[in-house]
Each structure stands twice: as structure tokens, then as C-alpha cells.
Amino acid sequence: MNMKALFIGGTGTISSAITRQLAEQGCELYVLNRGNRNADVPAEVKLIQGDINDEAGIAELIADLNFDVVADFIAFRPEQLERDYRLFAGKTKQFIFISSASAYQTPLSDYRITEGTPLSNPYWEYSRNKIACEDYLMKQYREESFPVTIVRPSHTYNERSIPLGVHGSKGSWQVAKRMLEGKPVIIHGDGTSLWTMTDSRDFAKGFIGLMGNLHAIGEAVQITSDESLTWNQIYEAIANALGVRLNAVHVASEFLDACSTEDYRGGLLGDKANTVVFDNSKLKRLVPEFVATTRFDQGIKDTIRHILAHPELQVADEAFDAWCDKVVAAMDAAARMVRE
Image (cartoon, rainbow, N blue to C red; front, side, top):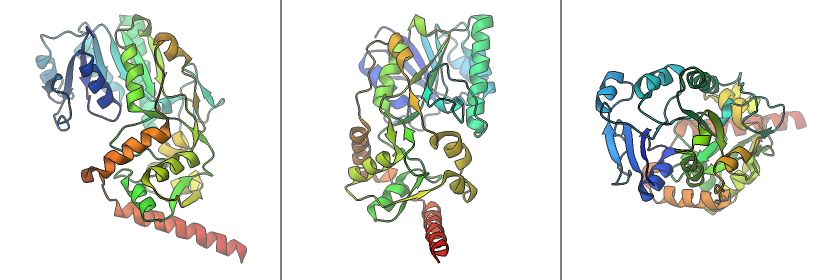
């Protein structure tokens, strides 16, 4: 690939697979981050160590560099995009911002989501900030010809973390541990709402197809798989990958939000509790070769194998575990009280 690109971040859940695939394709790729997670970055990738929030320092580091593509994977607030504009206006032919599918209208008026679905999420500040970021960048595109492409991922997973609806602040391992121990596992709602999981390797194929794509300038594009699953199917696939039987307890999302200090209002009511089905027609017009080829029941087996082989990824969360036990006990107590 005859392209010179800069990734701000480049080692996260979404970006790691893109970094690997670009390195394999011969892209001249630079990764700018603080250097905390660069051990797995391919040797061909050029590292720029620095804090993107140190605008003056970064401006000095990139003073002699120009790029075909700059992508920011770690911007969440408009002021961060204002900084990026100051740093990269005139230095890149395309600037890609990673937004979020959680920015789409919540609750939805139509479960089928296209890029034309309105952006509105009163439940989650994270999503509202992403919308504000998009608004700022499109203003710069319209008024200053800043070559923007907006990418909206949904629930993308890789080999380092199990994608779930309900977990604690320390990640998803504790839920897997509960499954392995035969303990009840909480599924929000009745588990029948539809959700879309996307393997990061598939996401990378769509993303790379947008890089240097002149038809993507000024556009917002969602990248997901075309596979729709119920949350019951998702949790069953995880349990199957662990080789255990699922012991599920269904709990209303509103109840989980009411009795937890986690951000379940945003993460559940503003996102995962809603049925979503993505129409990726726009992506396929822009990147005709794109197809998501990893079914969730296959991809999650790779994730489970990787996590079981890497104890450092098995982060315990005793507080969340105890909270789960309390919620399950409360549901049992409520059922007994009503029966009596």
C-alpha cells in the first residue's frame, strides 16, 4: 500500500487490528501515543512517543511530516478535535475521526440504522460529546475544506476482552469467571433484543478501504458486521466458547441502572438495551470488497482462547462479583415475596 498514515492511538480495541493489517500491506504507518502499549506494535511501524494533549510538543515532533491520512482513535470531546484541526490542517489529505454508533437516535424510531438516522442520545454524555465532535468537524469541512471522514463503529471486540452487556469497571473477565464457576450471570432485559458484534479484524478491512478514498471525504460511514444476534445468543456463544453451561438471570435494564454505581444509564439505556440492525450499504458502495467474514460464535472462541492463555488479561473484580450476587438474591427474594 503506497500510503503514509498517522494513527493517534493505534493500540486499542479497534485500532490494533488496523495497525497490524496496514503493516502487512506495506503502508508507511506512524503511531503517536505515550508508549504504554506498544509492545505488540509491528516492527515496521514508526513510533512517535508523546502526549497528544501536549499540542506544542506534538507540533514540534511532526513539523517536518505530512500525511495522506491522519486518524484519531482517542478523541472524545470537541476541544480535542479543535486541537487536531490546529495540528493537522494542511498536513493531511484525509482526517478520520472515530465516532460511535451510540450517537444515533435513542430510543430509535426505526431499528434499522443507516448513516441518515438522526443523531440524538439524551441518556449518555459520551454519545452527546461524539455528536458535538462530528458537528465541529463537518463545520470545518464545509467552511474550511478540512478533508474529514467520520467513522461510526458499534460494538467492536478483539482478542483482549469479551464483549458483554453487563460488566464491572475492571472489564469483562469476572463475568467469564462466574460462568466457569457455574454462578448466575446477569443478562439485561429478557435477552431478546438484537445487537451487532463486529470482530476488529473485519472492522479493519472496512476502515482501510476508506483510507485515501476520495469518495469518503465529507462523509459519515458506519462499519459493522451484518450479523444480528440476541443477547441470549451472545451469552450462550460465550459460555459455549468457555465450555460451560450458561446460568442466566434476566434483570430489567432500568433496575440495573437504579441499583448500580456503574454507568448503566448510558451503557444500557442509552445503548445496549436497544435493538439495532445496521444497514452497511453505504460502506459497501464506498468499499465494494468489504464483507465481514467472522461470525460471532467463531470470533469469540479466538478471544476466549487468547484470554485463557494470558493470565494478565484475567482481571478479577470482587466488587462487581459481590454486586451480581446481591442483584440475583434480590430477584429471588422478590419472586418469593410475590408467590407468598
